[in-house]
Amino acid sequence: MESIFLFIAIALAIALTAICILLLQLYRRARQESHKKDAAIAAQLEEIEMQNKSIKNLSDLYDSTIQYDKDITDFFINITHELKTPLSVIMGAIQLMDLKNQASTEECGKNAGTHQIIRINCYRILRLVNNLLDFARLDSGHLKLNPVNCNIVGFVEEITQSVIPYARQKQLTLLFDTQHEEIITAIDTEKIERVILNLLSNAIKFTGQGGQIKVAIHTMDNRVCISVKDTGIGIPRDKQNEIFERFQQVCSNKSKEFEGSGIGLSLVKSFVDLHQGTINVISEENHGSEFIISLPLRCLETHEGKTEEPPVPDHHSKITEAINIEFSSSLAS
Image (cartoon, rainbow, N blue to C red; front, side, top):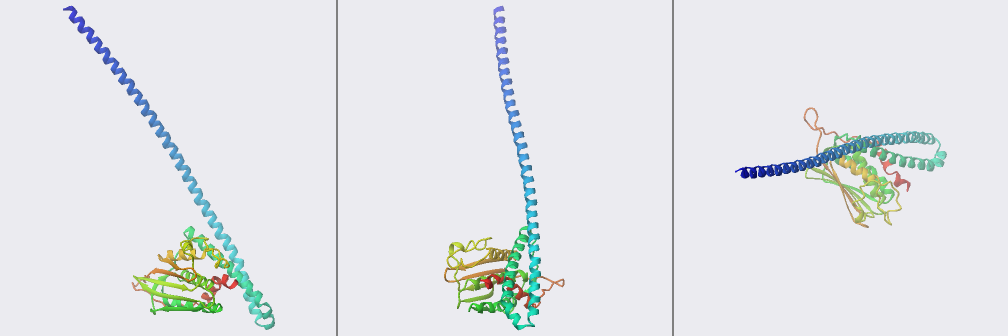
């Protein structure tokens, strides 16, 4: 009987020992897992801290880049304004000289050529300054639309008629065609004027003597479409996607004789985009180009809830000045 109790006691002792060993192993394993988790958590916390530092560094870098870009833009605008001021003084002096020379035919004849050279090159610099200013305002978000309700048919026709003398200088035929007498829509007249003048200037520049340029207007799907089509040298197919990018020029044997900054069409596209419109080109080398502008038809409402439909204002002198600036590179070449 005693041996049985002894056997049971030994068995219980062995079982308890085994349980203790098992519990010890489980405890050690739990400690190891806990250490691993603690290490993993510490690593994650360290990684999060590093990410936070990286985010802060990136944020600081972004803020400094934005500030630097603003400083550059402000500097750029100030410099271009500084360039524009003496140009205005020079242009004013030339106008006074012209008025003075009107009293003396002989003196006027001697100085006419020199005055013309000075005037044209002042216009060329002024054109570049205006374009650079607009790009700076566009990048800084300060270039805004000033839309007014306008008869766009009469507006574009007036611009086209004003350009005819420049086309005749190159023995080109400039036509205007539309089936509409009046299309009232809200546009920024100054910007659309520059768009049309830029397209006409390019058309005249790249079209040889005896060629034809046609400006047409029609409506489609609640939009007004303005087309400027020429019979000029055309644009190579592989360059047509690049012409609206900044500082891009079409380089070919026929176009390399013409100078340019490569920003005119890019600015044209920006002005059209501001109107929520589109501009596309259809062109074939040696067979001319057609630029098609599509603008949404919409009118501003007055406080009475009626649309305002004013006639196209008589701004012949303003158009003449704008043409002189836009066509300066053509006149100088």
